[in-house]
Length: 423
Image 1 (cartoon, rainbow, N blue to C red):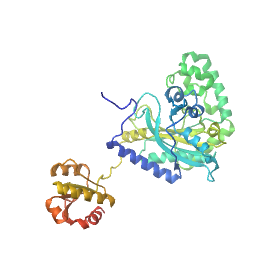
Image 2: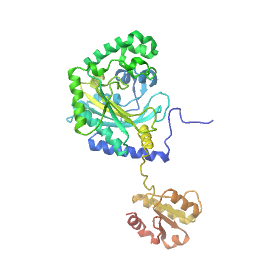
Image 3: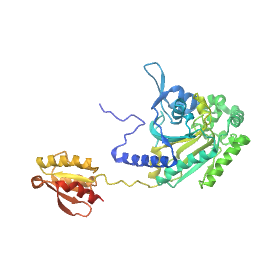
C-alpha cells in the first residue's frame, strides 16, 4: 500500500527546512527588537472560540474549519487562524492586569483550513503573527505594520506594497451595512447562495466573495469610507499620518474588507508586486479588532495584529530571485580506514561535539574515496583521516579543505588545532 502526504499538506525536507529556519531567525530577531514576546497556544480550541470571533458567515467558519467531536462530546476545531486563540489566552490568563500595557505577543505555528490547494496555499500552513492588545493608540497600528514590513525587508524583498483601508467603528459599519443591503437586495438572486444568506447577516462579506467578485454590482457597491463618522475618520487620518512620519508608503483601497468579522478601524494587507508571483498577491493581512476581548469574556482591551504566511514569504523570495546564504554545514568530517580507526574516530567525534565543533563521520563502511566525497557534499571545512599508523601513533591527519594544506596533529592537541583553524 502506498502512503502519501495528505492532500493540501507538504513535507518540508532538509533541503528546504534550513530556509524556514532562516525566516524563523529573522522573525525572532525583529520581534525581540520591537519587544514582542512569544506565546504558544494549543493547535485546537473549543469551536465556539472561532464561531464567536471569526464570524459564522465567513468562508473560514462555513467551509474551511477542521472541526471534530472529542471523547467528551465537546466540539473542537483545529485553529484556522491565530488571533482568536491569543486573545482567548489574554483573557483567560488575565494579561489585562499586567503592569506594562499594551501586551505585545507573537506566535508562529501551523494553522488548518480546508481549502483548494494553490501555489503557496495549503490546508496545513505555517503562520507568523503578532498581537498588540490593550492600546487604542493609532501609533501602535503603525508599529505593527512596521514590524511586518521589517521582516520582509530583512528577507530581501523589495517588490511589495502596503494596501490600507478603514472599516470604521460599529456606528459607521451599521450605516454602511444598511447601504449595502439596499444596494444588493434588488439583484441578490444573481448572486451565489452564500451571498444570499449573507445579505441580512453580514452584507460586508458579500464584497469578499470569491464566486461573485466580477459581478458589476461589486464595483458600484457603496464604499465604507463614505460612511465613516468623524471619530473613525480622525483615527484613520492619524494612522496615515504616522505612516507618513516613518516613511512607509501605502495605497488606499476602499474595497479591502479582510476575511474575518472581528476587524474594525484599520485594515491592511501587504502584497507582492513581483512579476510571476501569481494571481493571489497577498502576503500578509491584519487590522484592528477592538471588542474581541469582550466577545471572549474579558474586559475592554483594544487590539491590533496581523497574520503572515511563511510559505508565501518564501514564494515571494523565489519570485524576486532572493535567497538565503546556506552556511557550511560541517566543521569537521572524520574519514576512517579500518575498524580500529573507526573506533578512534567515533571517540574523537563525541569529544569534538562536546567542544562545540560540528562534526560527522561515515557509518556505512565505505572506501576512503567515497568518504571524501561525503565531506565535499557536507561542505566540511576540515577533514581528519585516521588509519593504522594514526591509531598506533596517537595522531591524526588534518586537511584544510579551503587551501588544501595538511598536517599531522597529536590527539591531545587536535581540538585546540581545529578551533584555531576554524577561526
